[in-house]
Image (cartoon, rainbow, N blue to C red; front, side, top):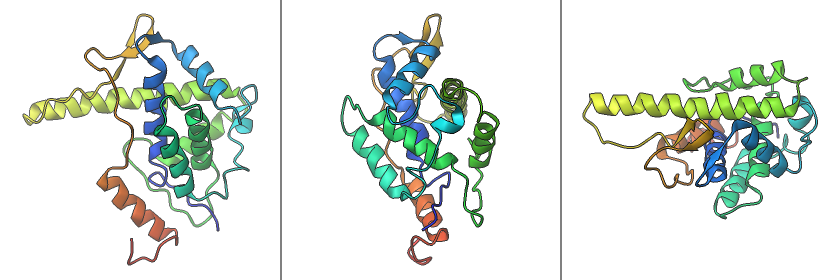
Length: 213
């Protein structure tokens, strides 16, 4: 069966990367370089010294079911500390960025469209994997987290909504650190809206009957 790597099919991936970053920071400060090196060292089954294309080689995951990969990530999240979290996330990234089957429609989102992610990965295919992972952590995860946390916080304030400290990680003089007042980040779990989207996509991919999705 051809895989259907959609933006919602592996919605756990970007949030799991952020959760991994939060755990790596611990109670201190970590530079981007330190985080990149740690992620590459922990993603043991992918060549840390190769190119982006070599690091993203999808051979081992291209035929995997999206739900199986999500289960692996969730299993790794259930263990603290988890020695397998970075490796399972890395497989999820490679799966999402693998070339799509001809019939797949890219489901655009206002955060990080999968088509854009694939273009950016393809443009960096020949550079060291280390530079690509730096781009993933800085641009795809941390920048997105700051942008949407601040935006949603302002929206809450304008509507007199709940006061929630959404910003979990900030850039300090020594690198990335936990935002003041934040002691932990919640373990990523699918929310009802994401589950509904995932069901719709699996129906469109032919993994479920249309009426079930």
